[in-house]
Figure 1 (cartoon, rainbow, N blue to C red):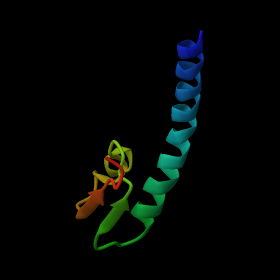
Figure 2 (figure 1 turned 60 degrees about the vertical axis):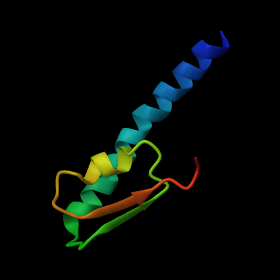
Figure 3 (figure 1 turned 90 degrees about the vertical axis):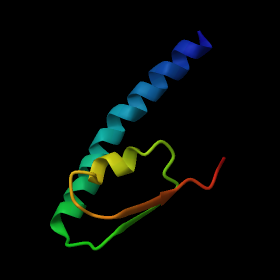
Length: 64
């Protein structure tokens, strides 16, 4: 039961995260940026959002 609840919560959060990623993508498309620095890149979800443009991306995850 506990794993099922965690799975449901993660799916809900991931669903709403799509809206946030679209906002970020719109922001980057509206600006002429030279590079992107992604601090706390985790799994690279943010990087995947901006990869469609030819912007250099520097990313790292400080937590092991």
